[in-house]
Image (cartoon, rainbow, N blue to C red; front, side):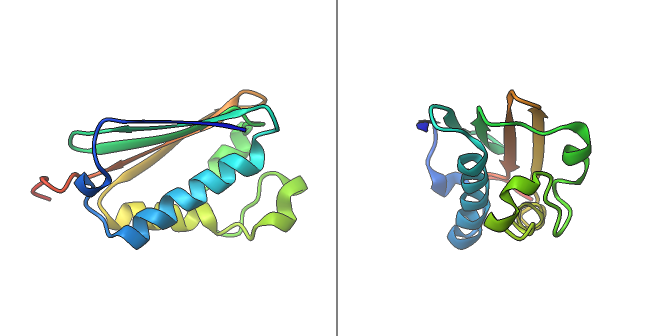
Amino acid sequence: IRFTVAMNCHVECIRTDRLRFNQIFFNLLSNAAKFTPEGGSIDIAVKGGDPVTVSVRDTGCGMDEETKAHIFDKFYQGDNSHASEGNGLGLALVRKIVAAAHGTINVTSSEDAGTEFVVALPSSSSDS
């Protein structure tokens, strides 16, 4: 798997604690790696501003509409072939952490065309 990272700001510009930030992106990156086949790629892009946005895009198997509708539900696993590799709590936790930080998370995905998660978090200069 090929990883590409593009940043135009420092992690310190995001308003959340380091542990929570790590939990968000550990889950997103481990899911991307789990569902991206050998020879695929995972691209990470960080854009400064308010909010700061971080996207994790992969060239994996993607998701159908039913899976996307439930992807943030506790214990939901849309792809049973990987059921032994998780418990269905990762994305539910990510959504909860992002919401607690007054941010948003969105997903776009198509079957056999990959998935992109975009997390937007308030910058440290934000008044909220």
